[in-house]
Amino acid sequence: MIIPKTDKKNIVIWGFDNKSLEYYYALLELITDKNIFICNYVSQFESESNSLDRKILDYDFTITLENVFDMKNDVSIIILNDYYNKFYSIVELGWIEENNIQIIPHLELVRIYATNICNANCVMCDIGTASKKGIDKLRVDTENEIPISTIEKLLESPLLKENKMKFSLGMVEPLIHRDIGKIVGLISSKGHSVAVITNGILLERKAKELIENNVDYVMVSIDGTEHIHDKIRGRKGIYRKAINGIKRLHEIQPNMKVVINCCISNLNYGGLYDLIKGIENEKLNVEVRFQHLYFVSKKMADNHNSTVEDYRLKQTQSSIGEESIATDIDFYVLSQQIKKIKRIKLNYISSIRFRPPYTEPIELSNYYNLSGQPLEGLDKCFFPYNQVSIKTNGDVVFHTRCYNYVIGNMLEKDINDIFNGNDANIFREILKKNKYCFCACTRCCGIMGGW
Ligand SMILES: C[S@@+](CC[C@H](N)C(=O)[O-])C[C@H]1O[C@@H](n2cnc3c(N)ncnc32)[C@H](O)[C@@H]1O
Ligand code: SF4
Ligand code: SF4
Image (cartoon, rainbow, N blue to C red; front, side):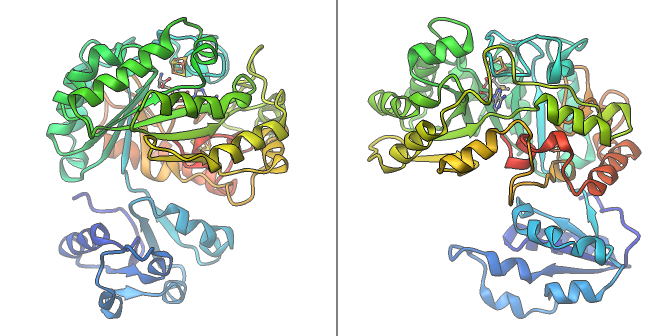
């Protein structure tokens, strides 16, 4: 267990489940000169399925939010296990600043750029299209594949040895990596969970390798019915390849969790219902997630650049290429598609979600408005407090879309020192000053909860 760094006398664990309790007891053993509590205010948000004994709320170590504020200026908070959504309103009310509460970063998710190259050419993607502009700049001048030695070094870090993490292999196209199975196996053998996000082109061929190495789940991107998908992704026949890949996974392991991710854009918004019908017809036992396009418009980039000084935080327009045009959407039609999908009776697909969960034309047109005004209830990013992305050359960024801000290099320093280092903390400070959302952040996955 890595001891959290803080000068404050009181540490509050924000999160209330069995894992938080385990964490509490571990901290208690390690830290003797500070008071450690769990904030039971969080529990008020808990669902009925909470398995914790409710009596635990009476114990001495649990405190209320009011108690937290009583510790004025002398409290830091560690947020565990996706409790950020429950933390949002506290930040929104300005209580964090008012009470000078420090948020202690706590790494929970590591995203790996397994490769730096792609075998598709999706028009809406600002990562894989090799335009050498916009967010694509993050791929320039780095190695094509992450070396196994980088993964080994990462896993040897005390931070990862002593804490179980979530890993996501989703960049740029992970299945191109010649040793992808070995990478999955190395990570899973240390007790971490591993997800793979893929365009599915190589899935049929690599399904066995992933399963044999204990992948936890696979997310496959499918953006429309056969013709639409192949057109968006720039290669004929790849819809069929993705579908066959999912079938292969289920042939080998029938209960393998598969999530289909569909990126909604001007190129497919009228065919979402047909996409669902197509997947049902294929009898695929999957979850489906629709995600609205992430973008940085010119206006958003200009506003952003006029408010940030650090050159590493500058942003360029993205995702609005010649064909992928955020504004070229009939929001009434999109709204009807969403409503129709919500009414559909399904035999194979186990769940369908929309992110953000908008249904009405007004909400949708607001989302796609190029001014990129912050969205109500979705205007704070806490990614820099709980995750990192590691590029093929070992550079560490908080996330693909986090500007050009490298917080360190894995080959030179331990991941814990990078995650808690000076550059990382400077970024967090500037983000906090910007109320946890830069102008170019408003349509980023960090704000929406991310993949
Ligand atoms: C960048 S890809 C990387 C993994 C893999 N190459 C794939 O296509 O699944 C991760 C996910 O981002 C989605 N995506 C690409 N461009 C996007 C955009 N502008 N907005 C939202 N999602 C996007 C893709 O469809 C995919 O589901
Ligand atoms: S396959 Fe994935 S990384 Fe490649 S261009 Fe498409 S969305 Fe981007
Ligand atoms: S929303 Fe979060 S992840 Fe996205 S660019 Fe902003 S700080 Fe980075």
